[in-house]
Length: 236
Image (tube, rainbow, N blue to C red; front, side, top):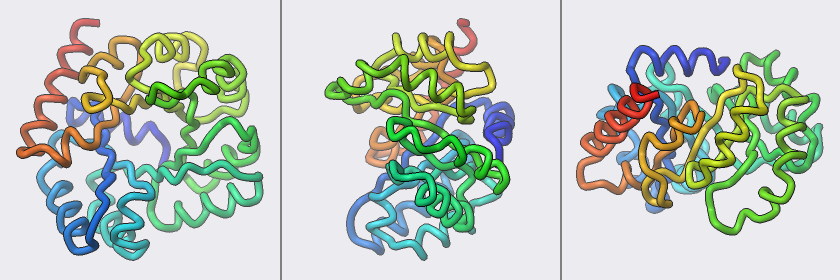
């Protein structure tokens, strides 16, 4: 499924919010919590990012069940920190797409995804490359940003990840990438970025995890984030 489908969901719901479902803990708790969250957040969340935490907690079958149950309501993004040689990357992405994921996040720095992008498009899936992480220690990403940007544009990834905590790099990415290459910004609230701020600098989506799934009222938290996003987009 192309990112155009994600943008369609964004327009339908008036939201740019993607939930990082990074629950980690006992299987029964994480499974029931994930189902609860996805059942109450459908009016505000458009996409769900799943990676190692939830998969290690509930297993592959648990993830399969969640995707199957909510595939019509959310755009599912696999985030398993992929960074390997080309044939392994293609084989892994094929498995993830067969599981029901609509897009896969991969690292750009191995420079091994030239063939992966068209391969994924043939599977009706999208590739999102990590351009800049959100934590303070991402020095190597900063030093090599221009190289990674040129590579991301050259291989035609569908989107890139740029930490919301580093808006200057979001702005630079927006200026350098093609307009149809979308920007995903993690690090909102718990890592210090304000909801909606990344959108002002050119991001297309914000990824939020703990500020929602650890909130006393996840629905209220999601609603407030989306309201901030709407204000930010309205002010542009």
